[in-house]
Structure formats: structure tokens, C-alpha cells
Image (tube, rainbow, N blue to C red; front, side, top):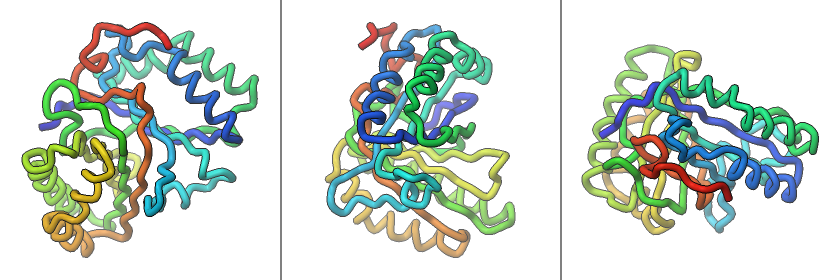
Length: 246
């Protein structure tokens, strides 16, 4: 089950064009070696909007941005809060932001929030396998602690079932944050589209959704394509001792 890193960062980036999206991805992948143990990064997973027919894009389509089709999203999980602070103040990270500003890559400022893993698993062991499909889900619960607590109990039980029964689901992690007490964020990774479809067709999934519905104001989900340079796990550096820059 879930190893408990102190802090996670979830962000949306808003490129101004397809070319600027490619440039941002290149900079993200090369500006800093997140597999270096000194970074204390356990997960570095970035993804772009899924474009396959039938893909759900409820969350990204609701974002207040001019070009939802170009949005990049990402999860970074750190071993501790000081590690996140060091990363945000690292010269290479600051250079990335200077370059993005100088080249006018963003159509609007990025959204970035701290979330805390609450139930579920980032990986069954030290490191999750490479994924092809990411699902993010946003649940807004009714305005009382009992509704949220009940929803988390349901999701804990479901995540345990997923961990046992669905090998095609590589990550099923549920996040909460004090600054948005009514929200629950789901981070799911799958080996392929067939694994996503099997998950959503399961009778267990249908029961969980039916049980959650009376506790919630809204539920939305989004499908994404994972960048191949991503890594997700419970150990610093994705289980490697550092890797050369691309």
C-alpha cells in the first residue's frame, strides 16, 4: 500500500501553441535531473491531453484557459517538504522559468498546488511500471466532514481491491489538501487503454460510483497520455541512481 511522502505537487501548464507545448516538454525533461538522489523526488510524472476517440476530458475542458488542447499536467512527489523547497529554489529550476518567460511559452501562469497522499498506492513495490494512460479524477464532496471521511473509506477499500485484482492499473493514489477540504484528487496510471476500459467496466467500479454519488456534489475525470520520461514510485529517483540529461 501507500508509502507516505510528505508532499506532492500537482500542476497545470498552459502553452500558447503546439510548438510551445513541445518546447516546454523539452525544457521540463532536460532542465533538471529528477532521478538524481539529491533531488529527493519519488515521482515525476507529466502528461498531455488524451486525443484518442472517446477519451474523457471533463476536467481540462472546464479549465479557464484559451487553449485546453495544449494543456500539460504533472505530479511531482517529494520525500519531504524541505526537498520541495530546495527544488523550487534550485538554480536549474529557476533557469527553466526564466527561459519560459523570455520565450513567452505560457499563455497564462501555471497552476500549482500541494496535495497530500491519503489512501491508495503510487506503486505496488518500490517503483511502478511505465504507463501509457493517466486518469485524474476530481471529487467534490458535500460540505461536511462525515461525507469526506465516508468517501475516503470507500476509496481506501476500492484501492485495496484494485491493488489485488487489477495488475493493469499501475498507480491508484488518492490525494487531499487542507486548503481545499471539500476536494479529493485521484491519480491513476494504466499500462494501456484496455486496462482503463476493463477497470471502468468492472462491477466493483460501478458499485463504488453508486456508493459515492450521495456523498458528492460533483465528480469529473480526465484521460491523459503519459510522457515516456516519467517515473512513479515510493523511492527517490524512480529506483535509479541518477540518469544523464536528455
